[in-house]
Image (cartoon, rainbow, N blue to C red; front, side, top):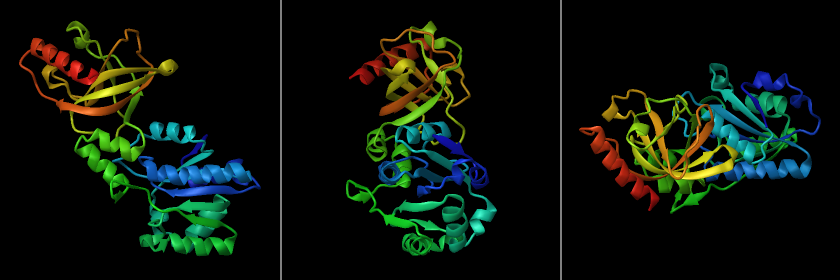
Length: 300
């Protein structure tokens, strides 16, 4: 999968000069929830059947993203997407009228001959354009537009807002249902202070990407994807580790049935269940005792 960081960068690429055209879906795509996946599967299928380039046009958010940039890119690549265009929400884009956006960006720069959007899709200055308007503009430009119904779960529409609310409440089970997979925290394993090793619970430490939404500080049952597609259950603490005077907010995981050097490796923790809030203990011995109880709960 190719990644571009602006419309101009894509326009200057060899891909933009392809004759076959593209199948495009547009939105924020900050979480790739099951509603997003429906749109993405549609354009990937159409692109494969028609020899088109599948493009996810993602409006970039400054912060509050459910997935980090790398997490999103990896997941889209696994779905078979050809191009991820991460478009900054610039002032010029914000002021662009809907017909101009369709003409210069969608049909011009991206050469879209097929577009898939949801019924609540909006674009252009003050969100003046909607899905039906895009279909009308597309018909005049030779671009077919498909409007897919929203995905629903438990009687309500699936949305990034619902995912964020589930994360805010540490409802990891609901977040997983909406995302179609457990919520991930991915990063490079870095050295800590080896306090966990000293009390019999060695940990791996990663710093989440800045701007990524995290659930409340606390202890979670987790499943970690390690290099070589090795999967291990574990116990992940999200927070600052107040008992040992920590200050950085990080994900610190005790892996079950695993004892190898992971420093410098890129790994991903999937948080599956909330166990308890983070708290400051009176001593390392009290912390050790609680981790033992937490590990037992996570294994259950």
